[in-house]
Amino acid sequence: VLLDELEGHVSLRLRHALGDALGAVPDDDHGALRVEVPQGGEHVEAFEMFRSIVEMFGDSPHVAVLEQAAIAAGNQGSALSHLDRDEEMLTVYEAAVARFEDRQEPEIRDQVAIGLFGRAKTLARLDRKREEIEAYGDVIDRFEGADRPIQRTVAAEAMNRLAITESQRGNRQEATAILSRLIDRFAAFDDEPELQEQVGLAYENMGTTLALLKDYQGA
Image (cartoon, rainbow, N blue to C red):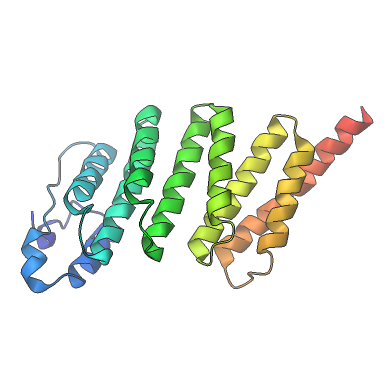
C-alpha cells in the first residue's frame, strides 16, 4: 500500500514518521516506500506493521528513513508489551539494538538508547534481576555522559530504576549513591523538562530510600 493509502490503518505519529522519511528520499525512490498493513487486533496489527517497516527500510542508505526504521524496531517491543509476549519482546529489543548500535548518527543513537532501556525493563518484567541490573548499568555507562537530551533522559530513568531495584534487594546505600550521582549529574539541565522529571523523581526516591535505611539501622 502506498503512503497515501494508509489513512485509517496507521497511527498519526507513524504516518508523520513515514512522511518525514519520504521527504528525505529522492522522488524516484518514493515508489519503493510501501507498507503492507495487516488486519487483526490493534496491537498485533501494530507489531506486524512495525516489523514490515524494519524489514523493508532497515538497511536504507537514507539516514532519515533509517531513523524511522529504528523507531519502528523499538515500537515492536511496545506493541508486544500489550500482548504479554515478554520473551518475544526481549528478543525484539535485542535484535533492534544489534541492528543499529554501530550507527553513529545521533538520531539513531537515540533509538539505540531507547532500545537498550526497553531491554532492561523487559528483563525486569521477566524477574531476571541480575540481568536487569546489568542492563540498566549498560544504559548508564553508554549514555550518562551523552550530549543528546533523549539519551540523557534515558540514562537518568535507568538510574532511577536501578536505584529502586537495588533498594528492593536491600542494597539501600548503593541505591542512595546512584540517586546522588543522578542528581549531581543532571540537576543543572533545567531547560530539559523530561530530564528534570527524572531528577525530581530521584529526590523522591532518595527520601524514601533514606527513610528505609534509617528504619533498618534503627532496628
